[in-house]
Amino acid sequence: MKSIIFFSVTGMLVSLAASQPHGQSFLLLHSITPSADCPGSHHHHVKRQAQRKVVVQTTTAVATVDADHQVVVYVDSQGKPVSTTTRNGQPPSTPAPLPNPAPVPVQAPAPPPAPAPPVNQQDGSPQGSAPPTQQNNPPAAEDSVSTGPGFKSGVSYSPYNGDNSCKSADQVAKDFTKISGYQVIRLYGTDCNQVANVLAATKGSNMKLFLGIFNIAEVQKEAEIISSAVGGDWSRVNAISVGNELVNQGTNPGTVIGAIGQARGALQGFGYSGPVVTVDTMVAMVDHPELCTASDFCAVNCHAFFDGKVTADKSGDFVKGWVDKISEATGKTVVITETGWPSQGDTNGVAVPSLENHKAAISSIEGALSINVILFSAYNDMWKTNRPGTFNAEQFWGIMGDAPSA
Image (cartoon, rainbow, N blue to C red; front, side, top):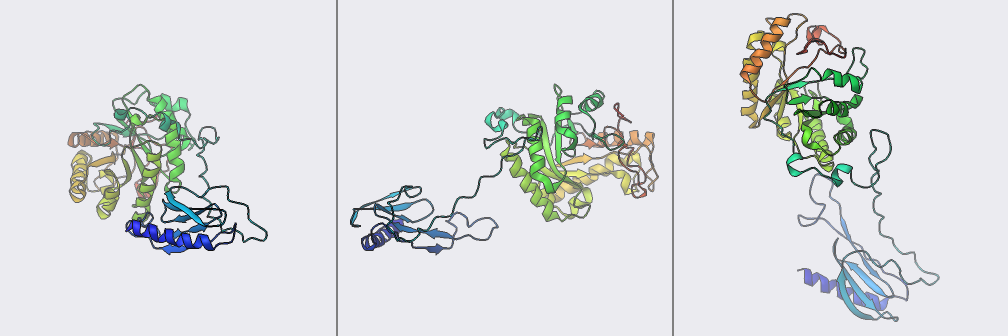
């Protein structure tokens, strides 16, 4: 079929070439609706239409049969065809001069402008058009993929002072002098230079980071910050989350799923090939299993305290019950990305905040689940505001009490 089209177009060009005035050109446009064999007919975009062009000049005539092939007719000075051939690429850039008057040649559409180079988040300078440094010097294959599920212990960390200001690199380093024995550290965002500061504070340890893109309206920006901070060493990243409890707070699940795809594409462009997930509550995950489907595993925040019907010493059974339920419903591995118990606050049914109950809950959780649990949180979060809706307990979930840098 392709050879028939080739000779048909070639014959048409021969007749066109012989009839054209010296130095003029002839343009034939014919629209073709893309099919399953035509690039551009996939995905969810509006179908674009390809164009066929026939251009005849004094020296050559060029016909675009498809997006990749052209028929070239060589003619003599009288416009008589001499020979034909095929080629890839664009027509010659030096056409014969046009007589006066002459019609204005139809120009092919200009290619889209190159995307603006990403900005170095450290100093604000553009990084240029070359690929990021980590792509130029990729880590060894065994180091480029994060571990994902399977870790034995984890804890979350937030780098904020009580007045909501950012902790300095020295303060973060001081906080991590007391954090030990955990394989995974969860961060929620990229502000306050937290990714770079925590990487520096945990350098030389076996800790991996469960990083977060917090604002799904700025996925590309936060992905660039993460990429710049890791400097190509993705071996220290366990997973990356996109949003935290967004559907539970009213965001449309489709919006979150779209952000997961955007983040995955951006991060892969920077050389990351590990898990990308969204984190939400256990109820949101059961109601919207598509969140798990779009993620590389199910990442779930699960707090027995807020149920109001579970005592601290039964926290482990409560959390494990939800793990089993979500895993059965989705067929995926479940990682608990937050769980714990407050040491202070107001009573919620049979759930009573106290230091004793805090310790009992943590012991129960660790006894029921030996892997894939991130405790909430390393230190009390005095930057938060206690509210009646959360039983005035927002500040008091720290496993190790107040932070050394407080």
